[in-house]
Figure 1 (tube, rainbow, N blue to C red):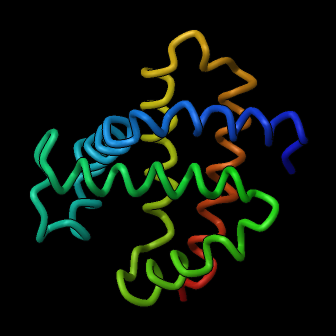
Figure 2 (figure 1 turned 45 degrees about the horizontal axis):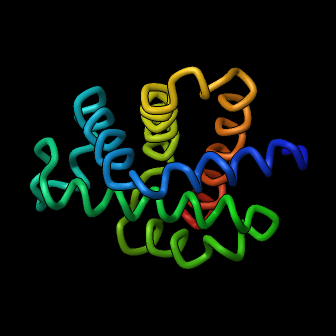
Length: 141
């Protein structure tokens, strides 16, 4: 459960990340593909080389979705329902991959935020990403 203070912090962090959404998202995806090569399976039809157009575009979409989720955290299930259906029924992304990506986005945020990525911020973002992933994975069967 997120406290009101954590919710405010999460919104602040994602709002700060929006101007560099392409960088944050593409770096997190590249970390995931490099560290967990099996995750490339879902992207075999795209150019996923560093700073490729596909990687930057998809990375930006992810960060924008995270920021939108942060702003609507009280209604996360409703807000993410279309994404949940899309990832489960059309893309068929296994829920484990969301957890893997969470780790990669945490590392990326830590690198970009530096000393602003405090233990409190880390814990809040980790809780938020877990909730976000749980909602995305709930339609998967």
